[in-house]
Length: 141
Image (cartoon, rainbow, N blue to C red; front, side):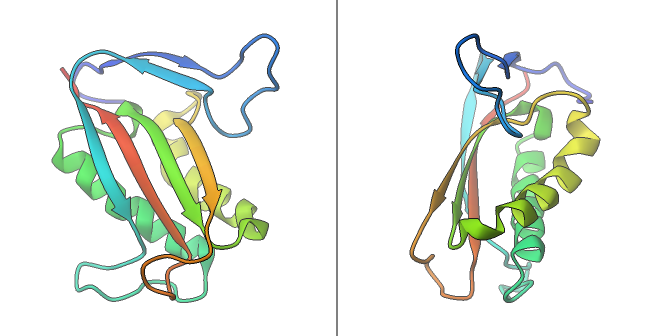
């Protein structure tokens, strides 16, 4: 759990009249300052593609890159309000979910994942990238 007080005030994963979120919260509320983190892809610190052709490996690298930015902001996964996913093949969605859960579950525990949207796209800015993810983060108070 975070070492600083969190700005997240509520995670709404069950809403009467809606099906339960499948791996995400329907809404996450927060107070205070927000950070909008640019999309991250499967690129290492040297600018090389990680996991060519492997959605799970690319998802892991993109999330690790996102985590690096989140930590530089002084936050962690518990302060992530929203994830926006852009993926070239939704048929591989389970590989994305499994990679996401490997990174988020150890930190979030039983908390619902952040609110999220997943959009299938024809392609990303370089054809070797299979996934991109950006985030909205509530900065710790």
